[in-house]
Length: 305
Image (cartoon, rainbow, N blue to C red; front, side):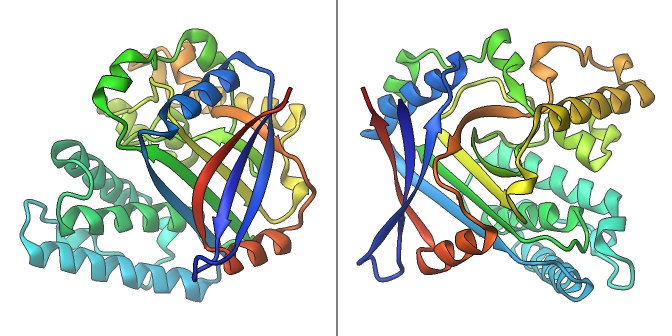
């Protein structure tokens, strides 16, 4: 059985821990595993761990304050991005109710990053923070705990990438399932902008109408895992089917067939699921682990016979 491990490291870089997933025996999972193997030696690791504890009204207001501060800093830099004052969040209105502003701020991040690239100046770094805050505020104050992990093997040589077949086939797209909320390893979205599924979750029909969707079209050596509240949030066949049904109803109710054929495989809701975690954990276990080991050192690939 093939396995994937995330090797975690403590702050002093003296101790290591791991989380392990058993790979599904699906064509798409095996493709991503092979891609991780092919790019491991010639890539640079870009990890991220988001530890979120229960959002309160106070904490979302604090994030709204931070958003306004980041917008101010971006405008003061004068590096080709000026965000109108009208997009500052109103601190007397719950941030998740200011959907139009959040969607527009995300679009500004997308357009600037597509034009100039990532990590090219302080403005783009600040816009990355805008992007993260937008996603944290969209849900509003919720009584959940969450740990989200991403590990990306990036800066792969262009020569190597050109030698690999990275295009996602219709069969790959059809293996996608709604985002798992507990313990499932997935291929990371790794695409600047929103796909149709993200628009569904944020009710962003304007992006679809404007032709600004960014569907994931390529396999990527980037993986992610989500842990929310408890293992009771693990996906089931029933929960997957319900979310797919709600997704297509949303598309139908908003007449999105005027703009795209949302029944095509490339628009299917979700991500490629790669494998399940091999040990049982509680959310407290996971939170404690990432507090003690807050960085991801590497992706370890195991090919058991």
